[in-house]
Image 1: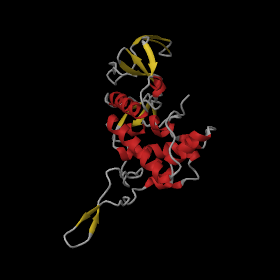
Image 2: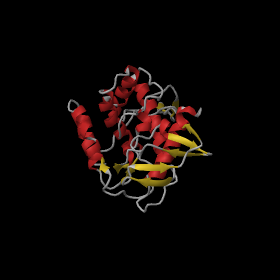
Image 3: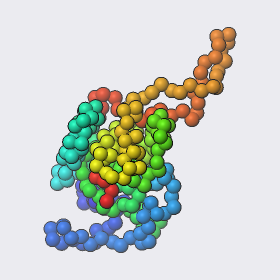
Image 4: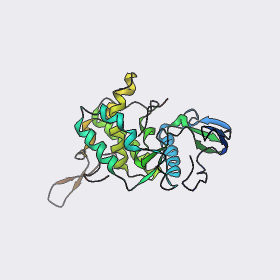
Length: 254
């Protein structure tokens, strides 16, 4: 995975040689090669590290047309979303967003980030030309912690994951959340792991597509003779929001 100029990105192993028209590659060996998901890092720390790696990969400029487009990658998702017209329409809006094309890894997760000395390198990119915000597989992978059964609580936790990852990756959190939704639904319909499918369905749930009214708490600010005014709780987090209309991914982990 190189920049459009042909220079190494520094986030992937060095390419030492190639043959067979690029079908056979000789890559540097990573030592100790420990996967991020086996490093002892907590889930939120993994999200931040993966987000930082995504930002480095995405910062290399617009990719060439030899890479498949995000629209082509989404072909199977459209079929899976045929019974979800709202999510299908959201997917088409996201795919149509064309002013932020980068080379998307498309399978960036904790098993595809390996330790090289004191630095992390990513491996096994799918290599897709599209919106950087589609690089959200880290939020969907099966090793993620389970979400609570309560829909509102699940949405608040999911939104905290999205914002943590998006901030590290230099992404707009609402667009990253939208890509998470449209990827989670078709993925949930094609897997047999019940716990993983349930978490994906929670990420794609209708209640996660709108920003709800804040929860009220018992804390009050007392006005001057005008009664109490509700004070927002510091712990209050909005449910997973969707992008405003008009604004402007990834196979299962193998």
